[in-house]
Image (cartoon, rainbow, N blue to C red; front, side, top):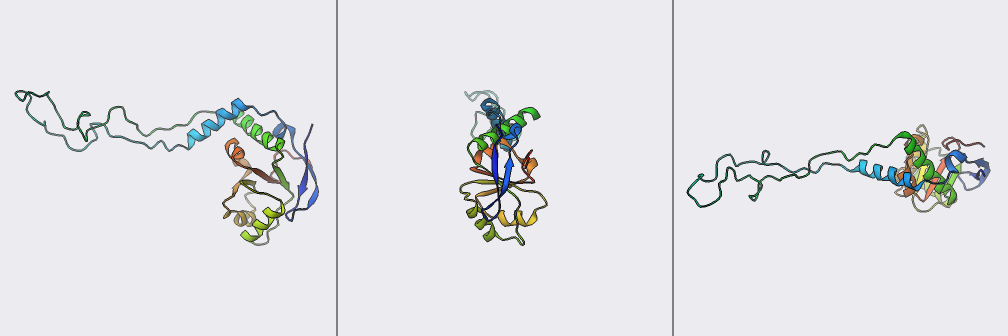
Length: 205
């Protein structure tokens, strides 16, 4: 059954209704795919910049530390061998990419699963349009209060809506994204999803 929401206004009122697309907001969340995609997203965020030096990269050690025979000690060719303090590291970490390949179909299924989970939890808000004449953080705070939005808010905005972006961007509890940037991990990390009528995927007013 299609989910119908009130189309909210910036001052907290209603301006009609909007129907959420079942293909996006009405599926049964696939937890296995969600886990795999979120794990891949977190892995891709790792810098992979850990680096240790091998014996070939450590400074010094060009001369043989002592003669080959007659000392009673084991023969050594360099004080930068791994067994010496300050020597090279054997099999240490090197810069690498932790990215995991996830196909488009899985990414879309994971996103729809996350959006459906938020819709089932009644954590989706659709605003008809933002009406900021000039960018003002104070007005943005008032809008959040009017809409009863608390906690972490993900706001999907149009790239051309400059006044809205500049009004909300300094609020630490608000994450601004464009529709093309929506992803499962950020959706799951948010308490509320806020769309406009223009940015709502597959909406039928």
